[in-house]
Image (cartoon, rainbow, N blue to C red; front, side, top):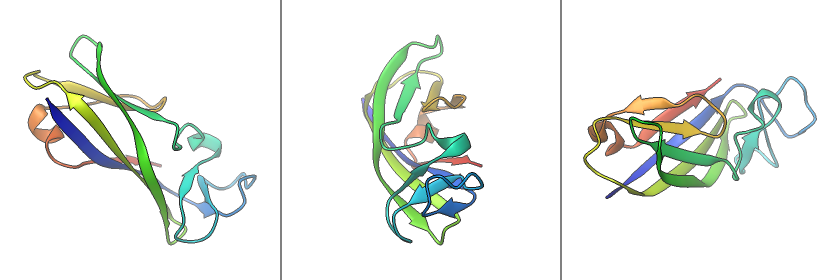
Length: 117
């Protein structure tokens, strides 16, 4: 078993107004926590990070631990997935309702970076 850690990034327009239809994410104040809106509304603190095996069976699930707005252009959401089984050839990682991405075990031992937007 091992732990997967990483960050998902929403690259785009940030706004303190969650009703702003031109924004990709929102925050309370610059430098504070953030979450996706509009096309990225599935990317928030409640979103799951699912790790699956080659057959698509879920082997571990994690969640975002924190988030931070950076200069109103990037929302960074950190995550941890514990108890991922070792020894699989490939792993799929899916964030929220986004398409999954494939990784080797060696790649999952390094901090992951998953960009959106």
